[in-house]
Amino acid sequence: MLEIRQIQSYYEKAKTELEYFRPIQADIYDYVIPSRSNWRNNSIVMGERTDLYIYNNHPQIAAKEFADNMVSLTIPSGTRFFDLTTNDKLSNSDTFHQDIELISERILEKLNSSNFYQAVSESFLDLTAGTGGFSINYDKIRDTLFFTSLDMSKVSFLEDNTGNISYIFRNLGVLDKASQQLLMPDIKFDYDNIELLEVIYPFENSYIYMITDTMFSKVYKKVTSKTNPYIIFRWSKRSGENRGRGILHNLIGLIKMTNTMARDVLDASSLVINPPVVASRNSNLNPNNIRIEPNSIITLDNIDGIKPFPISPNLPFGYQAIASNNQEIDNAFMRNILGQVTTKEMTATEINARMQLANNVLGAAYNRLQNEMLNPLFARVIELLTLNGIIDPLVYGNKKIKLIYSSPIINLDKSIKLQKLMQSIQSTVQATGDLSFVVSAYKLNEFPLYSAKALGADISMLNTQDEVNQTLKSILQAKQQKSMAVSGVNPALNQPINLGGVPNVQ
Image (tube, rainbow, N blue to C red; front, side):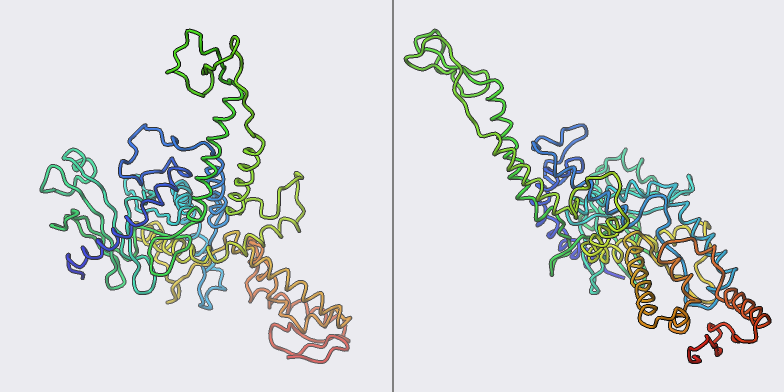
């Protein structure tokens, strides 16, 4: 187990990197994610306005839409985006399917009845800035999972030697006596006001969770679990760094420039709507109060009466420049990848083309999300549900059950492979001119299960492989009785079959 001073050295290193990222993160959150902005030293207080810098809200809309799309592509609400399986032969038995189906439904039920999707959606918004995170715990009183999206301005972390995020530190702030008793009634603290720190680090295939003060003078709580209660995931990262770099890291310069242009266009527009006027300097107007702004008055020599000040700002250019910049922002967030949809309905080919392009663009990022978010998510959820007796331990026939993800972006790849297989079968028929040749060339008895998985169909409606073999055997035996000209049995049973002119195959 790590010494307290060693943990402190990890914290100091992680905290230094957090502060290194703070300036750019402050700009990103102020201009694009103001609802979650907490990065400046003078952090927002409850009820304070968080949009004082924003004159163009297009980046906010684009970032929110991108985060929502990422959620729908990875963990769509209300649908089961995972399957349970094992390499054991028992996976073909009816008992196995019934047990696994029951466990899967209980996991999905607990996720849907919790605040899972709300917390993850908030975390995916943070992901546009590079790094998102949430914690997972179990509320025994309410008998439910509960998720908390993290304020990433308070979280620092380090990778272990395998590149996984294992050392996590969250500053809980200064807690007074009343807050201590309300939030942590089971802990007796030494001071009426104390700044607390949550620490998580790996130890012997487990994780140690502890609460200490920021000076590491005393450990107030320590708990061991098999999984990490905090899930930290990144969009992409630079070598040698721990914190992620998101799409907004590259966009923030353009966003700030566009925001300034929008402010200038608004100022120019107000001058056109309410232009200043010019008046004679000999009037009773005070020249010290003259300012060129809407509804102001400017005094000049040789002016008779009061006249509008001539203003001709190039507003169309300003609008066009802002629209062009917004288009660049849309492109970076992969909005309308194949162009704007002009009709109410798209063909299957158009939908597939869009999804395939999205898969190509997001494939690398999704691989990181699966490793850093989905895998730890299910490991933690399964541990909590098992400990609380909601599901049975995931061991079947001395084999550990594993997860297979079936989210839309994963199913898209399966669907593409299915289409290529169908094209291959069609090409075989065209090349040979004989449909019966397909029977000997392809494992057609395995095709129903393969296609059902690729299309996301309910596999419980399919027969097991043994049932398929038995049915095919019965059909072939019936054909033998009707016609002695054709003899054979199911090729899946590795027996010879004669297909009329096609050589015998094994």
